[in-house]
Length: 300
Image 1 (cartoon, rainbow, N blue to C red):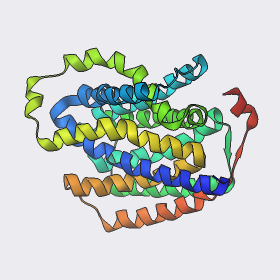
Image 2: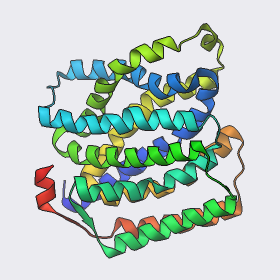
Image 3: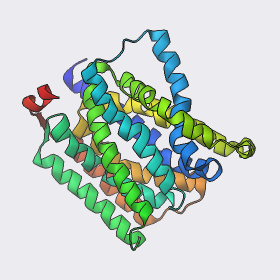
Image 4: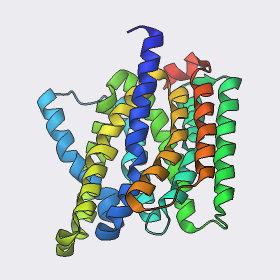
């Protein structure tokens, strides 16, 4: 695959991943009401581990090297432990539209960590488009009138930081280990530590949860925790971490659309206007040049 075609396909895979991730908060909001934070935040990894184990065994995948294992710990800390647990806890008290706006800082966090972990150096054009997107999202947040930060807001901001690091690390590691292998091994690393707390929080009342709660939980385990990451890490490996991370600016608005469809949350004309601005900023940023610091890349 030629370089330009490879980058475009990487952007497409990144978009697929973002669309899948956009259903994560709405699904979490539904599931956490019936299953609780621990089951939704950690249980999804335990369920995903069974699927992943079958795939790894059937394909007879080799174990990662010690160096790769150390880097997988970073991925597991963010994508498997920190983000699911923090967002599950936060969504017990926050509306999806609120959480979606705060997650809009994720592209900046990812691009920032890409500089240090992957040696990517975005151009001025890239940062201009990123700033436009960020300011647009901040305007949207002010429009909603969020007021003072709650503890749940701080949990979401912490989730953004650790997931940004996980994205940057996983996107770079995917180039040598493989995209689906990165999240697969990260899940296998985390799952054994989650079995006991998940088991202690299972109750018979959960069997009576409505079908939409079960569908939401299954979606979180199979798609949000595994398949979406396969597309996302593949996209970053092919299209570049910083460039593909720009697509995440669409995620808050996709989340709000899904929240409107599935949770009856409202969508306004102002939301549509801001979304259009963000879309054009993403288009500007996706063509911005991103150079590579070979020294950092080799060291990682």
